[in-house]
Length: 362
Image (cartoon, rainbow, N blue to C red; front, side, top):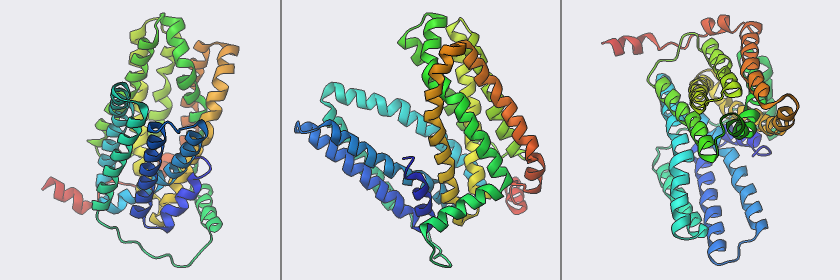
């Protein structure tokens, strides 16, 4: 995915986005069906799984930029926040709750191969939905350019656009500081500080997911705030402060509440961020800009997880969580003030157009 995501952004800007999504869906369908058939017939080997996994995630890298870029062509600008909020609510529920539960039932009742074949069928249904989607008009490019030049145009936009560079730089460091402790050290914090086991850990991580769904749902029912950059940054920055409680708490319920709070604020910021990209980035660059966002997250996530273990052993798990809660606050303030984001968001107001606002009041 890391290798392919930048190319996925170029494809989203050069090709019909609906077609890109359909190709990804058929790759998902074909690989799941192949893995299921090999498993059911007893022919599946480890190298098969490795090759299929590589192909699936390479295709996934083309999905996210195309999805981000197609949404503004389907909906009015004032509806994007609501759409991103609903998506941010449904996706984690499907990925982290319904999907694993269904997979567990299928594997328990049959064999893993059958579950993979059912997954192929579900991908087929998703392809039918995409086929039913109305075609989106595609403006032909003014001139034919190379893939490298298209990539360079995306990076040029990154370095010349202050609000985008500031947000992406902050997000990179945020991922580096926060993701590792949550993904690697949280099970040990639950065990060592509360005496809990797997079920206690599931409760804490589940609270994070529920908080994310609630945050997405709440923000989807609101208008984009006027101070959208400042609020987004502080939701990420100050929203990490409850991680301090995870580092020092001796009661499980405190960890649950803290995880829920982090989930809420993180999702609110993510929904605003996705909407901001779709409303402020030029349409012909949106795929590439979205791919840069995914690339940074993918690049820093494994680094964060690799550093979390040694850091936890060196300074202790509680102090690691304290740092993960405090550092994002300073990073957010530095980004807001250093790049003068309040001035930028006032100069580029995203309030509803006067006609839309007056129509809504009428």
